[in-house]
Amino acid sequence: MVRPYAVTGGRTKPGPSGVRFDLIALVVADDGGPDGPGEALLGPEHRALLALCRDETQSVAELSAEADLPVGVVRVLLGDLLEAGCVRVSRPVPPAQLPDARLLREVIDGLRAL
Image (cartoon, rainbow, N blue to C red):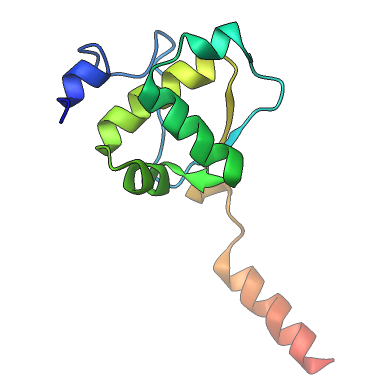
């Protein structure tokens, strides 16, 4: 078993850009990402996450569970993959930008009335 700090090289924050990954952020492998030599420089944990993302779009929490790694480690590794252009991340919509529940209920009621 490898200690989490060894996997991340002692880092606790993802990348120099300080990007933050929510647990429900969706991650997908980017087809335009580096192949061959660029991908060869990635560690085995990076490649495992990338393989999981290639199969299907997954959340950060799902990747952590599937790779059997702590969420903090997955966030750091995803930061590396994002900077290398290997993955794309879709961040969740902030609650303030979601439609009002009252408005949605009125729309549903209107559709039922049809």
